[in-house]
Amino acid sequence: MSADIVISQVSKQFRGGALALQDVSLQVEDGDFVSLLGPSGCGKSTLLKMIAGLTLPSSGTIAVDGILPANARQLMSFIFQDPTLLPWRTVEENVGLGLELGGMAAAPRKAKVEEMLELVGLTAARTRYPRQLSGGMKMRVSIARALASRPSILLLDEPFAALDEMTRDRLNDELLRLYAERQQTMVFVTHSVAEAVFLSRRIVILAPHPGRVAHIVTNDLPWPRPAGIRLSAEFDAQAAYVSRLLRGVHAEAPSL
Amino acid sequence: MKRRLTFAAQSLLVLAGLLLVWQCAVWMGAPPYMLPAPPAVGAAVVERFGSLVRSLWLTAEAAALGLLGSIIVGVAIALAFAQWRGLRRLLYPYTILLQTVPIVAVAPLILMWTGNGLLPVALVAFIICLPPIIANTTQGLISVEENFLHLFLMHEAKPAQVLFRLRLPHALPHLFTGIRIAAGIAVIGAITGELFAGASRVGEGGLGYSILYASGQLETDYLFALVLAATVLGFTFFFVTMFLEWYFLHHWHESNRSDMPD
Ligand SMILES: Nc1ncnc2c1ncn2[C@@H]1O[C@H](COP(=O)(O)OP(=O)(O)OP(=O)(O)O)[C@@H](O)[C@H]1O
Ligand SMILES: [Mg+2]
Image (tube, rainbow over all chains, first blue to last red; front, side, top):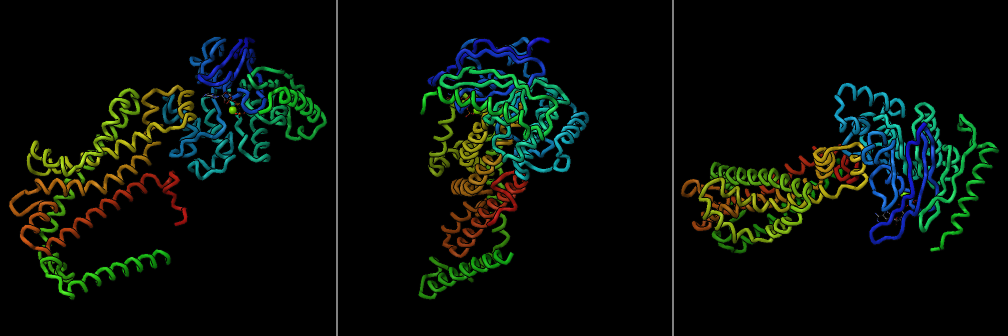
């Protein structure tokens, strides 16, 4: 199958800022689950936004499904670090936002929203407003909204970073379940080694100053991955390996 | 509930105290054409209730018309400012300038151009209500977080959808802040306008006109009644806008949460 996301020799220089990314090349195949792991400020969010076409590279090219990212947005959904829910809309109205903007009629939209709410376990909270939800529930709404438009590529920017560890683990389990069901392409930005090891097929470790690809690790943790796999020796070994690589990247970064 | 009752009792006590000070001043020999006794003002209210209410109504009409007009026009201008940054850069400074123009100085000019009656008075109210509506709404429309804009972009939203489903609802609390400010000055604007052209007939007009007329006739007790009426009107406008703000925002906006401690 053809590569879904092709990033070739991309650099990003912000106006008046430092070089955020230098010469990044990466290919993400259809149905792959790739994590971008690296210290703060190494350009993870910038890279993800460029894949979404929300920021343009200073040089190099990105193609999504063979075309410019800005023209391929109907294939992608973006999940932000904070849930980005519209506070004046109820849960179901938030979930249906993308479908509504796309012009889907009310009846099929309602059915679709229903399905999504069931998927993330929020049917009971459908008429609540965002301020009446916990952090984990808000994130679920955000995921439901992203999945509603049936994207073939999901871009996630540290979606669970603000949550406590137990909630984060549970949402990771759910994300993996969704991934197993739908086999979407996932690009997942995270700070957490455990999260990256649990979720991904491949882990891209980025080095800072300037941001660049330091290592690409193929994660040989077997599939399927039940929640309990986090306690296995294999998991520990894989996490230790990735941690070591990450620490090496940290060490070569100039101290601030 | 109990706390509210205590608060109401305290407020009433302050009012009673003020009335007492007033009455004492009268007892100490202030002449009635300068300072009528509270009961005399009360009597004036009762005696001339009909014309008082008529004046009040005329002013209320003009102020409401001006306020409503400023909301419609102000929001339209703010939407245009949000949509076209160049236009905003070019014209926004003038809306601020409009705010600094002393309305008392301009009112006669406006009335000279437009003549007497309800419309010119409403126009004066409209002019002083406009800047806070434009300024607050524009601020709300353009202060949408980047993530929300990216979200709409990812869903391939059209510019009109960004404007009406993202920017406008986001600006609603700001708009209501503008309306609250405007509601307070709408009444002042209408009364100012009436000082120069509020007569519908000789001796009869809105509060501003009647205040001028009563002071000319040295009907000080009625003058006090008119001032009282103007205050009541101002309060009414304020509370109506507060209620509307609560009604439209309480279910989602933080500052209007019903479960907030007071
Ligand atoms: N709009 C911008 N203008 C200027 N510089 C920017 C902009 N956005 C990001 N940067 C810079 O680019 C670099 C990479 O930022 P980015 O947000 O991609 O990092 P990150 O890896 O996502 O960090 P974190 O893990 O803290 O989210 C940083 O040095 C940052 O200061
Ligand atoms: Mg980031």
